[in-house]
Image (cartoon, rainbow, N blue to C red; front, side):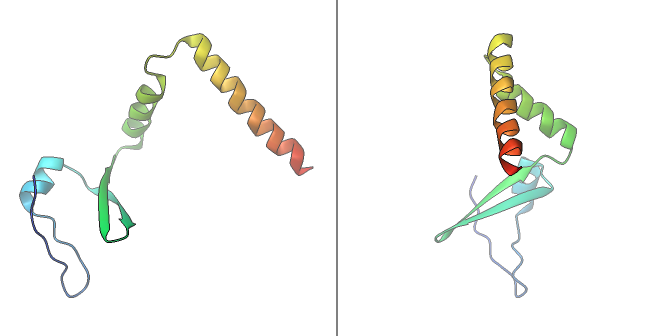
Length: 85
């Protein structure tokens, strides 16, 4: 879906209704690169967002692999704390 939109005098961007209804978002992140703006929706419910993140991170990984990754992360964290003292 593609629409042309304009900024108003106060710099606000109007997102057409059909795009808002199609995407069903309320919170957004805007990223600017050279002459482009990327708009990404953010999950309104933090619990749902964590659930999605968890599913993506866990997908296709065995319990042993997850344990190993957790151990490595803990070791990195511990080393950072020890180096501070």
